[in-house]
Structures are given as structure tokens and as C-alpha cells.
Length: 219
Image (cartoon, rainbow, N blue to C red; front, side):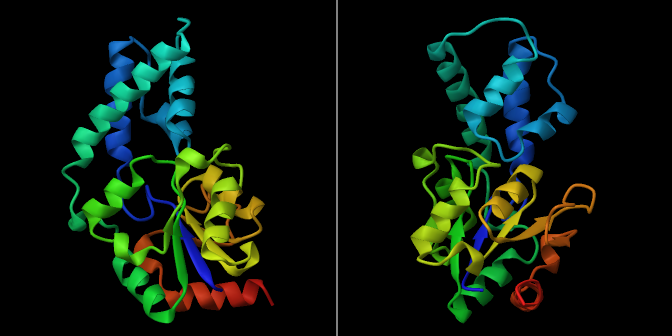
């Protein structure tokens, strides 16, 4: 195990509620029946893909320019909310794990579909723990395609099979597995059934847990 590649939402911090509230505000304005159940379909999906899914709830056609303006409006709402994020919003056990990885010389990368990921890491005070943050603007295929995780591995100079990927969404787990990496899922067995290792909370994550399970899987 030479590197660990993290998703952001639901793994490093939980800004999912802010995404939901921003999309909900936009959907209400457009009179679309968007709720928390439908919001589950947006996990790990890019902003424009998320918008397309939400617009599919209605029958109005929008031009590319109108869609771009709607996506920017949502993002402005979201950015207002995440401006309040502090290091206290790190999920349990994550800073301890990042410290362990740094001290052990194990590479770390962030593979998030969020264009706001660098800003959020800065607000959380953990940017210095990451060797690389994948620039999602350069990623052509969103999760479950493996491109973002493969890019993270390449930037760290390691092989995919030497990496652990950590995700909280089914699309993310598929992305990790398609990349040929060891997949760790944060969630319930029902949600994460394809993952190699499942933890119910980030508080369970540690370097020893990852190394032990990675070793068993790759024997």
C-alpha cells in the first residue's frame, strides 16, 4: 500500500447537506419536485450532471447558456454556506488518519467531483496533508468512470494496485474498483456491498486497519 486516495463529501467532511439545500432552493424556484430521496442520485456526480438529473424532473427545455447560469446560481448558494466551514467540521478520525499516513510516508490524494474541493480543504485546515488534489476541471468522465482515481494515482507516481480508495457513494466505489484499487466504503453494508472493506464511520479508519486488510486482499 503506497497511497490512499480520498473522496471529499462523506469521507473528509460532510457538506452533502449544503449541496442538498442549495439544489433544493434552485429546484423550488423552478417548481421541480426535488427531495432528499432524489438527492441520493446526485452523490458523487458532477455539478452539471446533477443539474441535468434535477431538470429531468420537469418538462421544460433549457439552453446550454441557461443551464450554465442555473449551475452557477446553485454554486453561489453553496459557496455562501461552505464559507462557514471550520476544522471542527472534519469527520471523526480523519485528521488522525491523515497524520498517520503523512508520518508513514504514504501518498495521499483527493479525488472529488467538487470544484470547490481546494477551498473546502483550506477551510478545514488540512490542505498540507495532501500530496495532490485532482483538478476536476481536467477530468472528462465523472464517477463511476475510474478516470479521477487513475489520475490521482498517476500524479502520486504509484500504480493503481498499490492504492486504497475511500468513498461513501456507490458510484465512487465502482470508480475505485474499475481503477483496479482496493475499495473502502463508509456506510452500511447495503449501500457499500461492492466495497472490499466497509466501515460504518470514519472514526473506524486507521493506518493499521487499512494496511492489514489491504495485505490480506492482495496476498
